[in-house]
Length: 199
Image (cartoon, rainbow, N blue to C red; front, top):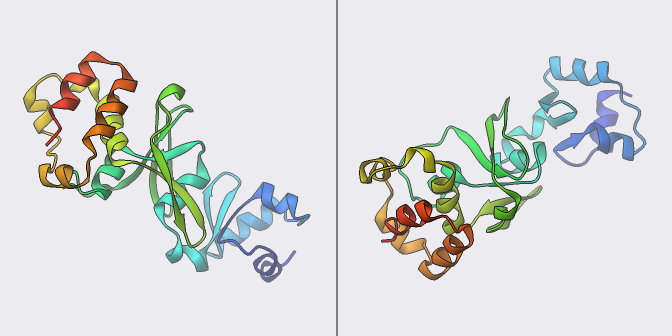
């Protein structure tokens, strides 16, 4: 198969080896490797590729959703997105019910933090031009962050070092939902520090 035939056959900006097989397209690994070297394709991870011509249209959330599932954007990425923390986040951080993983590719670093499957909830789909990704609700993003960093939060100073934006918390956090979600975690130490985050 020639590269322009691949372009015509695959309409999505991202595809997998499995997608090609399902469409009955006979593409060899050496061809994909060559097209990556020539700059036509971008390898996101083993068996997953993006068309270089479409790279600027893709969002980090979409890439995160494609390369490792199940997962939803949470932690620092969601907190920064909601304006809860002032820092720029240089990785796309997701929560997953699978094991911890990190992927580096053209689009940056994608970090997946493991959470128990019983706590894998509190997210909503975000529609994009090319599909969707999952994003933690504000309340769940904050609780995920506290839960997965609980070992290093032992004092008021530790909590304050997160530099939470109280004005944004007041504007965007639903206190009733936050308390309901907090109860579902059922962890005393988490409850102690989470309640101090309420504006």
